[in-house]
Image (tube, rainbow, N blue to C red; front, side, top):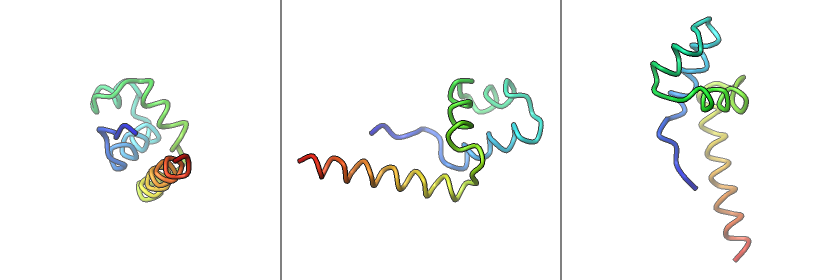
Length: 72
């Protein structure tokens, strides 16, 4: 599975900026991400904090490893 260039803290920071009223165009230009990435992040992680996002990613990685192990 491809790893992200952005940490959970970048992700939550971008979402918090947008929630506080910063225009999305400023957020994505400031962090160097595309608008599509921002909206995907917001759809997937919108109401979660950095620690919850980190835990969710760990669970997803573990599930990916287990599904590969299960198929063999």
